[in-house]
Length: 64
Ligand SMILES: [Zn+2]
Image 1: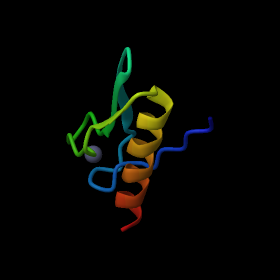
Image 2: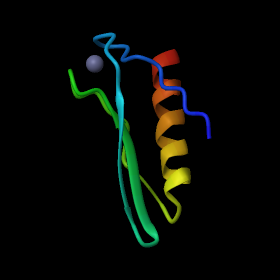
Image 3: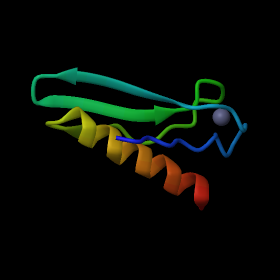
């Protein structure tokens, strides 16, 4: 999967994916470590899906 994350619209910094993967309970969100702007936390059975939702939510927010 090719993940492309846009820079933070607030401070222009690089953002990171925060994830935790437990069995059938995977969570992911995107957060800017500098100003703490973040997406919601997405919970999915598969970590790739949770990351996909978080990344898409982040990139949509940046574009708005
Ligand atoms: Zn920021």
